[in-house]
Structures are given as C-alpha cells and as structure tokens.
Image 1 (cartoon, one colour):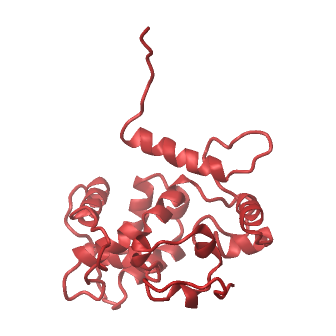
Image 2 (cartoon, rainbow, N blue to C red):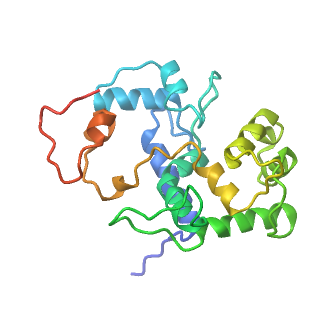
Length: 236
C-alpha cells in the first residue's frame, strides 16, 4: 500500500519549525495561539517550572522582553519575527566582522573554531531591501523618510510613523555623527549590531548546559574555555 504525505520545504518548513518553537513556550490553558506569540506569562511560568526562578510579569516585560515585544501594554508579545531576530544574533555579528571594510571598528577575525557565515549575506540582504523600497541597490541618504518607507514596504505601518524610533535607528547606524549619512553596508552593519555586541561568538564552541546559560553570572561566563568549572561555581 502506498502512503502519501506532504513534506513542506524551504520557507514553509522553516515557518512551521518556528511555530513549533513558539508553541512549546506557550502556556495557554485552552489552545495554542496560532500566531505563534509568546507572552510575559509564558516566560514567567517557564522560568519558574524549569529553573525555579520566581519573577513577576512586569519585571519580565521590562527586562527579558525589553527591545522585543516588551512594554507597559498587556498586548505586548514576542512574535515569530522577534524569535527569528534572536536566533540571528550570532549570524549578524559574524557578518559584521567579515563583510565590513578592514578599517571599520566592526571588522575583525572570527574566533578559532567558529563557523563563518554565508558569503556576502548582509550585503545581499541590504541589496534586497533597497531594491524593494527604492527600485535599485544604490545606497540612499539615511533619513527618517527612508526608514519610514522601509517599514511601510514590509507592512510595519505603526513603526513607519514612529519618528522617535527613526531617530534612534539613524544614530545607531551613524555612530560617527556624519551630517549626511547613507544607508550603505557599514551603516547597515552598525545599525544591526549596535545593541548585540556583548554576545560572545565563542558560545558556539563552548559546551554548556541550560543551567549554566540561565544561572551563571557574567564573571563565571568569562572563564577560560578549557577550564573546568567546580560544583561550587558562583550563581546569580
């Protein structure tokens, strides 16, 4: 007897995997939220049940979710796009090191043993954005109007009207304070890594446990890679 089944491939398969990740984090009593959202309540219960960390939802909104879905509104969530942004942090940092000009402060070698990113990945993403928004890949003047157009092109209408956010994005992409910045590869890289540079790319080649990742202090996370951590290690 022949059995037929559907096996999603490409972007569809990736989307379903992300929805599965989000579903695992949800704690809905009745049914899984189909939009794949993760709330402060979900994170609170995960920390309590898995790690014994007791914290209120307001604290989670202002720390864990800050800069993602965090805020004062009860509707604030971590959606699938924000889950993707978290997963891409190591890749973005790698690209900023290997794709920017050698004179750039962002440029530098990858730690030994860390896998390199796909060649010209950041450059191709910027090219697609510029072509979709402006019609060609020529770097354009980086101003609030361009950022608003980018948000509008990708359906983020609320963000397209947030001029305070636009100003912060320009500052992040233009740390030198150039009077007429353009959205080129350097500016794009600066904007993407401005708030994630504390992530250590060596995490990729370290052997740790969930317990270590959640509960060890920063001082303990800076131990020499091949040093054995004693059971009496310092905890937060």
